[in-house]
Image (cartoon, rainbow, N blue to C red; front, side):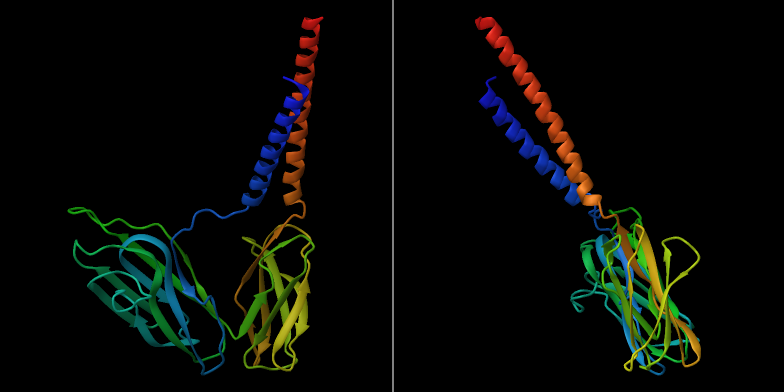
Length: 309
């Protein structure tokens, strides 16, 4: 192998290894394949006394869905269910779920709504994709905050003569509160600024707002900072996380003499050097390959010269 040929191989190897390293760096933090989720949308619901809001119970990334049972729970001392709009049967509800003739049953009792639905007929196709199961409208009857908790059981279309099997999935609850909270960036690096902002209902200036935080799966909340609302009921505070990890952020405030809690927002904090660590690794690998190729090329060249002499 001549010196020019060796350098050509080094160049090709360098480009390949560098490209591979960049690919690893860019894809190392990507999420796994989408999973089926039954959730309350929107997650945060903000309203004042005697005001109404509407939520959707949705399903995402489901395959072979043929039947379902969904339950929603709330605190009846704070919220009153006003109306329901089931979205079963995509022929009549384009953004809904399930095909064909659908057997449906709804029950509504104190603090619990239940909907059951199933497609009918072996020739009816199963449902794949995402859609809305039901819309629920609530009225705020008292002060306080509460979860909108959802439970679900999903059934696949069974082969002829066999029972239906359950579909694996996760659920995500919703939350009602007269305090709205927002984080400017859900993914940051250590030391990067995060603006935590929001508003209170009814809009009122001079309300003391305390921002709390904790690491995911920890129990105790710590004080991140304190602020006051402006004339329109808005608040904001800046946070620069010092350590990596996944954090939960929430706001508390005394509204109309009642201590209220906002929903929870998550912030993922990553180390500054994560990307560059891969670059350094790639450089080290390439350097080692170059050294090995140069040494082998020099030995072969020396051996050829020795033969000629």
